[in-house]
Image 1 (cartoon, one colour):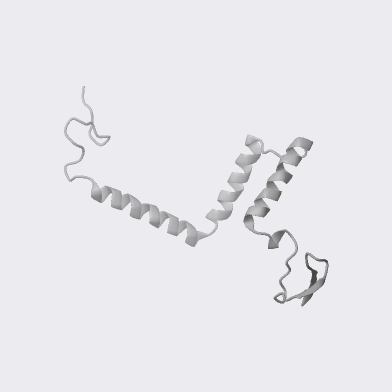
Image 2: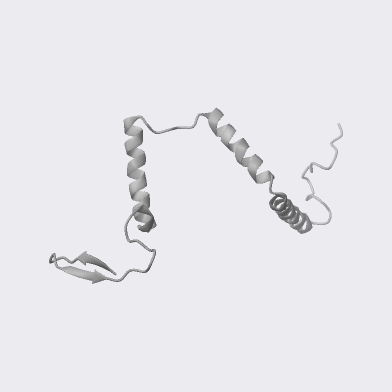
Length: 112
């Protein structure tokens, strides 16, 4: 149990679950966290201390992220399987004769 002051300034006991604190950033609701973080971001930009990625830094970060993800072979297999299934479903929905009359398909050779 913790003691807390009421509006009248009188001490009142308050039950809190063990290991849970009602203080700090993590205990706030997400909307309040976003509001505070947004103010901090604006202040950093005004002070000139905010970091902004250059295109080269962003490219390098994306490359590193891609390498990290592609190390997980099971994940990559699942992505490939999902893409193959989607393509197969799309292909199955096409009419049997190919493209409608009058349209040029990328599979049909064009002769001059």
